[in-house]
Image (cartoon, rainbow, N blue to C red; front, side, top):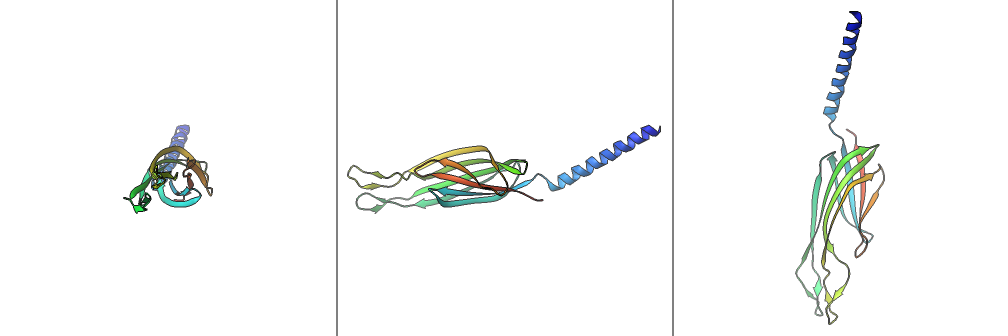
Length: 167
């Protein structure tokens, strides 16, 4: 009978500890990741995104801007072109202190290759669309990881930093 009560006591203690641990985890919830993305075009910083996002959730943001260029030999202004950049970031897991992020990018930017009419007059840059997905970018704490989306005309690089938020 004593061994049965010892087993029950041990079992009850284990259940109690598991319950306390579950409550503690539930109060803290899933980890949060603070991330920053710097957009670098031809070596110049041109945009920035940043947020703190809960593991398994996604944050999406769109930045837009309009540009006007001159057209032809008379250098007449033409209608504006709307450029946009949409970034969705989702922390997918935490792996040994590293944040693992899923990134989804949709971007419309200017193709920097110069074009001309048959007479040699300037034409405005044409919009160019890029869609890219990185399903698991590993970002060590305190480091910047570069993800190159476009090699040239223009070169487009996303520089990513991330850290796990203490709760």
